[in-house]
Length: 375
Picture 1 (cartoon, rainbow, N blue to C red):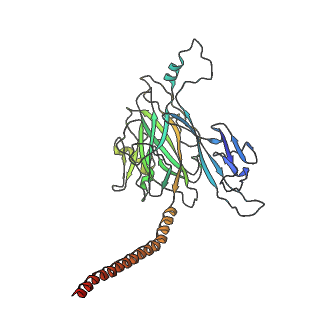
Picture 2 (picture 1 turned 135 degrees about the vertical axis):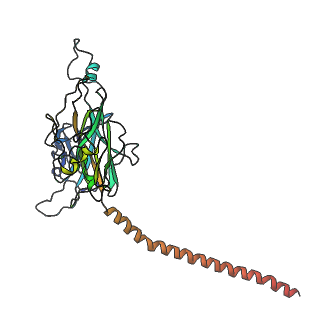
C-alpha cells in the first residue's frame, strides 16, 4: 500500500509537518518525504490494518491521521486535526498459488472447492433494508441498520450468530473508551437503554444473515465523531437447537423482558443475570487475539463444529446536534429579511393600485366633459 500525501494538506498554502502525519492504528511513520509530498509505503496489513471480505471483494482498511503539534514549545496550534479513511479493494474471485502445480496433485480448482474458507462480513443497510447504504454519515437520532452475513458455499447448512459487538474510537476493540452493543453470546444490550430502540430484525431472512438496528450515538466528552463497531461472528450447524450460547435476543421495554429471534424465551434469561454459557473448549471469546478457527469438515459427521471471525465495520461518522443548531440560527437570521421583502412587495403593489385608480378616474371624467360642451 502506497499513500502519498500533499504537505499542502488543507489547500491553503500552509505546509504540514511530516511528523504530524501517521497511518493506521499503530501510527506508522512516513517512509519517505520530499519538499511537497509525504509517502507511506507499507504492507497491506501492517500498522494493524484490518481486512474485511464481501461477496466480491477483499477490503483492506486504514486511516491517515493528522495531529498538529506546537512548534518551539508554543502552546497553540493553528490547524485542526483530521482523520482520512482509506480502503483498498481487491477482487476475491480467482485462483492463485505460491507453489508450482505438480502433475500428481488434484486440479487446483478442486482443492479450492474442498478447502474454501468462509467469508464473514458486516454491512450498513438502507432504511428499508433492501440495499447496502452508500453513506457512512449518520446524525444523532438516526438508526444504524447493520447486516451480518457469511458465505457458506460448500459447507453443511449453517446458521449465523453475532456473539458480541463493541464500539470504539479506533479499530482496536480493546481500546478505551468502548461500549458493548451486543454481549453475552447474542444479547443486544443497547436495547435496554431508555433512549434506544435497538433490536434484532424479525424474522431472520436467511440462516446465513442476521440483521439488527442500533440508534446512533457518540461517546461522552469526546470530540471525535468517528466510531468503529467490531463484532464477533460465528456459525454453527443449522440443526443445533438455540440455547443460551446460540441465540439472538432483543430487549422489550413494554414487557421488561428478553425475546429470542429463534427458540424459547428461556434461552434469553441469562442476558439479565449474566450467566450465559461459556464458550466450549478450543474457542475464544476475548478480544486479546484472533479467534481460533473450528475444523472445517464437509462430511455428514461434522455436526458440532463451528467457525468464527472478528469483523470490523467503520469508520462511521456521527454528526452531533451542533449542525441542527446552526441550521436554526440561519433560519432565524433570514426571517427579518424575508419580512422586509414581503413588506416592500406589498407597498409597491398598493402604489400600483392607487396609480391605476387615479388614471381610470381621470379617463372617466373626460368623456362627460366633452358631452356637456356639445349640449
